[in-house]
Length: 281
Image (cartoon, rainbow, N blue to C red; front, side, top):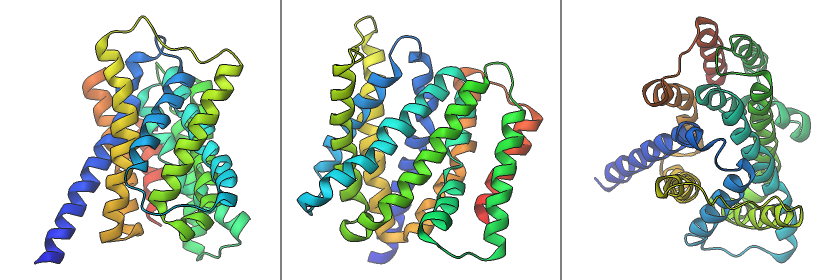
């Protein structure tokens, strides 16, 4: 009975994670043009990192702090800023689908950097995934742009690289600990860089609802959703938990169609289906 209850709670956690992760592009889209993407991303990871630290039960060794921060920068500074720029320059559904293709790049970098060996079906999945991205990109519609698509692919690529490079520390400390430390430390570096460059622009002309969206992106999407994801992973395992990412493009596209009135072409649907199929191989 306890196992069934724990599993039921884990799936509730995964639903929370899926809804939160699928909402980021759609809910942040109305703020593009009003809030600087660099501020939004740095503030998001600062809030999310602080929240995740509340659940950390293991200290990290001092010598691991710098590499964790540098690898974390791939996620918070490069990947997620690229995602926000993809949202700014393309449709929210486009950005969501492209960043959700990151497992393709995880597999690719694992082969290159970790010398992992896969079955021929897995290699076929990697190739098919890249084909799907090309098809999806070629199906761009009104609201999309090549620069937005570029940023979406860059977000997926750098997140894939971040995931592979972080594996060593994930095995040593656990996913929640490394994500909390890397998010918080890299966000502080991000804010420092922006401040030095004079680019840390705090928005002053947005409403309370606008600020509530920014806080939501940090507290819920980057804080609560990561915690619920890792808590669920402890019960159902990494493989089962990671399958929620297969559903993100579908759920995010549904959100975009219903709340933003976005449309989607047949070519994009074919590309999305190809990417999703490749992730199952």
